[in-house]
Amino acid sequence: MSKKKFLRQKEQREKRRIARERVEILFTLAERVFPYDPELANRYVEIALAVQQKARIKLPRKWKRRYCRRCHSFLVPGRNARVRLRDKPYPHVVIKCLSCGHIMRYPYLKEQKERRRKPSEERASREAQSS
Ligand SMILES: [Zn+2]
Image (cartoon, rainbow, N blue to C red; front, side, top):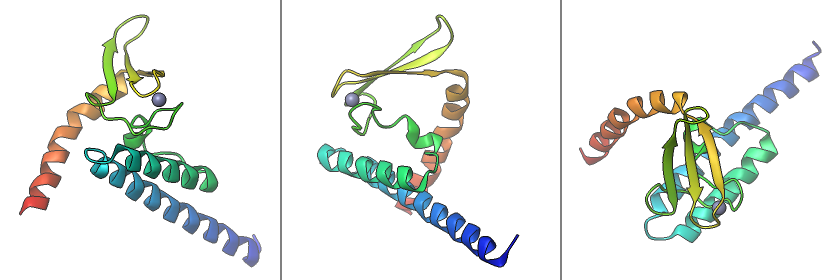
């Protein structure tokens, strides 16, 4: 590999790393502002998706299901998203965006593992913040 090519690859990796950080920050902000400014939360989602597409990175699984694929609204279950579990024809989660009515389906088994892990993590981060 030539030195120039090597440097270029390094640069690409760095760009993707920064893009991933930005996406994380933007979705975190979206979650934080949603309760009092859902429109702003949606703008953060739009920016995060633009960053993600430009850098051609994958969205972390954590955030993948937190926005509507059709209207790009930030989704909060119980507020602007309805979440249901279905067993047929295979175990899956049905997420309905209440802003535009779009329905998304995701296989369930991975979701279950994630959910088992999540509450303790959230508690830990809350405790860390309040202390
Ligand atoms: Zn929608």
